[in-house]
Length: 493
Ligand SMILES: *[C@@H]1O[C@H](CO)[C@@H](O)[C@H](O)[C@H]1NC(C)=O
Ligand SMILES: *[C@@H]1O[C@H](CO)[C@@H](O)[C@H](O)[C@H]1NC(C)=O
Ligand SMILES: *[C@@H]1O[C@H](CO)[C@@H](O)[C@H](O)[C@H]1NC(C)=O
Ligand SMILES: *[C@@H]1O[C@H](CO)[C@@H](O)[C@H](O)[C@H]1NC(C)=O
Ligand SMILES: *[C@@H]1O[C@H](CO)[C@@H](O)[C@H](O)[C@H]1NC(C)=O
Image (cartoon, rainbow, N blue to C red; front, side):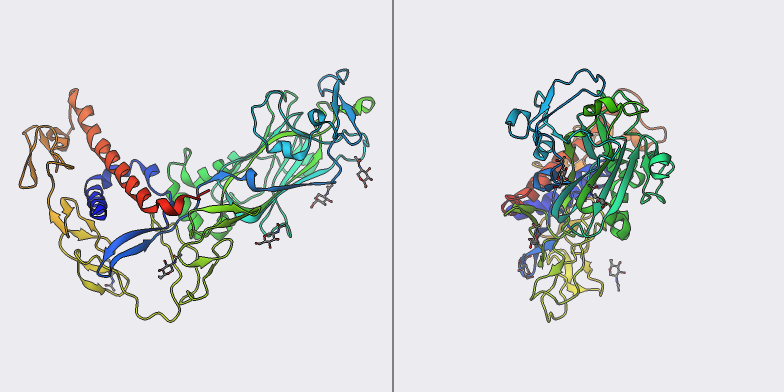
């Protein structure tokens, strides 16, 4: 019964809102549902969709390690000076006193505390020997980055630094980006910015001077790796065309891999000095201090899971579609009837699940909607032959002007969900509109369909109506989708 209601809503939505929804792509294309129930001649069956977990703050799930391991300040205790004032040396680091210690965990604690908490290295006592530190962040799980990596330095930003990534649990490393006050001098690379990149050069590794320059570090504390600007090369400046990005990610493995990591490594090569020469009489001014690292992403589950759990110190996908493995990267043992493949973002917006099928499966049935199709007969490519008024691969959607009622019935209005607007009357399930309005529900001012459009104060108001009706339907549908999925999503990340 509730199901019927969902299908009816779906039908209304399909009929009424499809055109209007083109302007609201954010409402769809989340890939947050892996399966939903549909009617077939076998009763309720599952319809499978491509799905992925929501993006989350990934720093909660990492392990951090430092090289050299004893590079954190405070053992033995030492004093350090302010970078901008060598005579201000009243800061102390002591690993054995909680208030004066600066262990690595403080890079991942809650921000907004006063005073700020941060990790800090020893000072540059051994100058001119380089002060080198590697900070390695490991997830022991493939994750996909969804937002910029942002590192906040509490002292000046380093004058030379490399961000590296690994895709194979730390066995091999590739640079992500180089950072320097002088790229040519430090890495013999031409300085570039992310704005210099295009769709064709998106995978190029660049050296940037954007996050190292200047001595005004009190206001410029962050070093970024720009994920969103790279996404924007496909999805448009405000990421409004995610469909284009998803389409590209689907079809280009290199692009997908570019945003995928198992580990990150921050190689600090030279601290901020704030001047052209290092003041050897005051080396306690030079050190690294990081108050925050942001890494937003999602577990990579190959579009076969919409949740990822952290259990026994380990992230793993909760695989659907009869897949298994930490990334849902293979078929379950008795479901190897065809080769495993990742789900696909295409076609937008629901994608393709590419489920694993049982071993020794016979001919595949179509699961056509019994009320919508002529018979459960496939035309050879998985499509059903639909009755009048129905459409879609499984004949479960109604064409505009039809409503679901054990099949798609030519019915436009009723006195409950679909009321005629602007004074129209529902006569035999069709709206009889006043002279001023037209449209299935009399929702359009008649002048809109005439050349030149509407003039006068009424027009703006009227044209707002269909989308708001659609928003309501969309919300209802989303609610129904949630209701269907609630038990599975309780543990979602
Ligand atoms: C860290 O340990 C190494 C070897 O154990 C030692 O040579 C080095 O001086 C230590 N560094 C610091 C800053 O204590
Ligand atoms: C940091 O990583 C680099 C590159 O992998 C390596 O050569 C170096 O020995 C590591 N340790 C330090 C302290 O730089
Ligand atoms: C990483 O995960 C695997 C299981 O997927 C586990 O066997 C291994 O011990 C983990 N490694 C670390 C360093 O936690
Ligand atoms: C695996 O496939 C079977 C049969 O298609 C289905 O009943 C079962 O729910 C599937 N399991 C999962 C976890 O999707
Ligand atoms: C089956 O139907 C679909 C959708 O109507 C169509 O695109 C496809 O070409 C058809 N295939 C055959 C073999 O008729």
